Amino acid sequence: MKVLHTADWHLGKTLRGVSLHEDHAHVLEQVFRAVVDEAIEVLLIAGDVYDKASPSEAAMKLYSDFLERVHDETDAAIVVIAGNHDSGQRLGTASKLFDRRRILVRGPIERDEIPLILEDDHGKVAISALPYGEIYAARRVFEAEDIRSPEDVLRAQIQAARARVPEGARWIVVAHAFVTNCQPTESERRLSVGTVETVSADIFEDACYVALGHLHRPQTAGANTIRYSGSPLAFGFDEAGTTKSMTVFDIDGSGQVVDLKMVDFEPLRQVREVRALLVDLVADAKVNPSEDYIRAILLDEGALIEPAAQLRPHYPNILQTLREKRQDLAMSSAGRALSKLDDPVGVIGEFLTYVRREGVTGREVEVVKNVLDRPAMEDVS
Image 1 (spheres, rainbow, N blue to C red):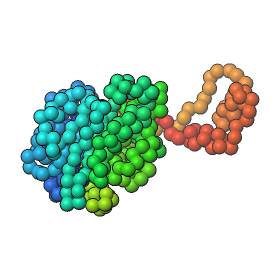
Image 2 (image 1 turned 60 degrees about the vertical axis):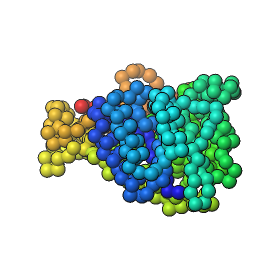
Image 3 (image 1 turned 45 degrees about the horizontal axis):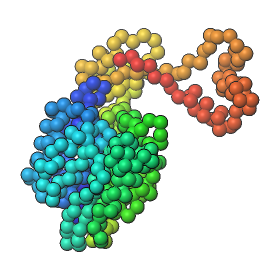
Image 4 (image 1 turned 180 degrees about the horizontal axis):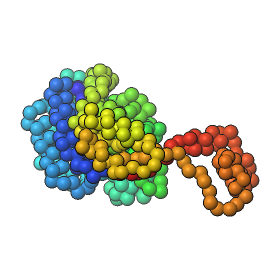
């Protein structure tokens, strides 16, 4: 059974105030083309369809038009779950109107985790769609006051889902979570405050494949079959220059994942950084104008006159200009460390010794030096 896994669309999102609507439409067209070209039988969308609980009409239309097109023009089954950015109630409102033999859209968490059951030449495939759920909502649904963390929520969902998987069926899980030891970006929102937000990959035992959403970097989560597809677009400059993708694979008759591959997105505009003296950036921009989303890192010293305005004729989507400068370690206050101002490592070491009555370790010295050597940024947009 041929499956496509995507997630974290964040329809309606802006990048430093600039609408990404055209960019989203461009990548959703690529998802549709992949469904057709790869002869996909199941499309999995693992949460954060929207960027906010109350999305714009344009964002909702983009989503509904996409689902209708996949439904009308292909034979693919569709599974969608709500993520932490979505309103579960809003996403799941029309779910009862869908063809339940082919489409499963899960908004709020439920006590009875009924999977979508599909069949191929080898038998049944059960797909459990586990939407993101808040801790207190999960306590009410599962009538369990001992649910205190995102892992507790997901364990309750997994237990309920496992009970509904038919004997001998191959099992796919779609979930929205932060799995331990995976790498986030700057653009994810925390799943919990005041408690550990990560969950163990061991929680997904017995699943043939786990389609995860929430983290925006494509990556595995402890096993090749527990994966984040990542977001289709870069949503921050920490992702500048990265390649975004969707995941395509087959589930064979024994439940093994085979022929897994990443299908790269081709964005309408790249998110990237340029770094040089302002005069050199302007000269290069004149020769190589671009509509990419750009952050300029300026290496100039001294005053600059509206650097963004100088670059914008050639970079219409320049979103930020920063000046790179070395950390200024000068201190104006009097104190016992003044004699060591030319030795910041010594100042920090003396402070730590004073506070904890213990000198610095070699590892701490290394960390301090790395921080001091790192250039600081000043926003001059």
